Amino acid sequence: MPLDAELIAQLRRVLSAAEKVLPRPLPEIDWSACLAANWRRHSFAGTLEPLPAVDNIRLEDLLGIDRQKQLLEENTRQFLRGFPANNVLLWGSRGTGKSSVIRALLNSYGDRGLRIIQVDKDDLVSLPDIFLQIGQEPFRFIIFCDDLSFEPGEKSYKVLKSALDGSVYAAPANTLIYVTSNRRYLLPEYPTDNLGAKLVNNEVHHGEGVEEKISLSDRFGLWVAFNVFSQDQYLRVVRQCMEKLACDNRLELPWDEEIEKEAIAWSHEKSKRCGRTALQFAKRWVGRALLAAKSPGAPGASL
Image (cartoon, rainbow, N blue to C red; front, side, top):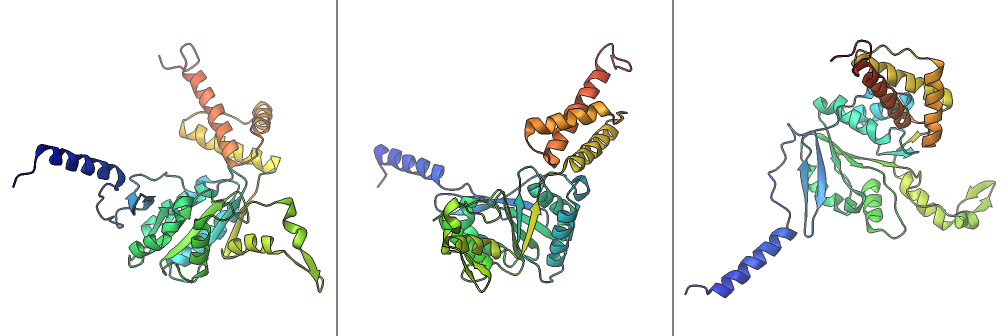
């Protein structure tokens, strides 16, 4: 018996509403050709979405963080060789290169089997689903969560804690977890946290609140601290960034006292001496010099 027009219209409305809620179908990722993916959680499920392009930053492009790069590169190389390696917490001030070094690792070791899956904090509850999808792949995966911090009681906190602890939601052998955070303990710290601390046999024993905060960070085997630069270190990085940008654009731009003063003033305006601030100043100064050199009427200008 044919369906009447009203029923057909209702079915179409239901299908249209369902399409807005359900994730769009995606082909299975070919990890031999895909270096990185994002996990996208939808109403009823989640999917791995390949990233078509990855920032081409290299480890040698990151200046002023040689010790941090060494620690992360050693740990990642151990992991790629199948040797014991640690989950990593990269913590410290904003703009100091924490997330950039992860992208640089992928560019340096993607041809050796390294793959990265970026997961938002709110999607960490999906870690068991992600592990199921990649656990049998012949590649080495870093689950990367950028700018991570928690508020008390968040569900994803317990899932991550369990995954790091190797218990209910243990990561497969081909997977490590790298996270970046401005907070060393990933949870907010309050003046009252230390009220429960006590001295036992000349050792400080923290109260329960502090112990809970430390317990998550302790599950990362490797802590890598990113600190703000000293003024001398900042100026050295500014000069290196400027020399590289000038060279790339075939521009002669000698370092002088004026540039140094302007670079210091720039860092004061930004309230931060770090690699990001140094690169931003270098782009500003070199770009302005190029614009002046190529403007009509300027010496050597192209008309």
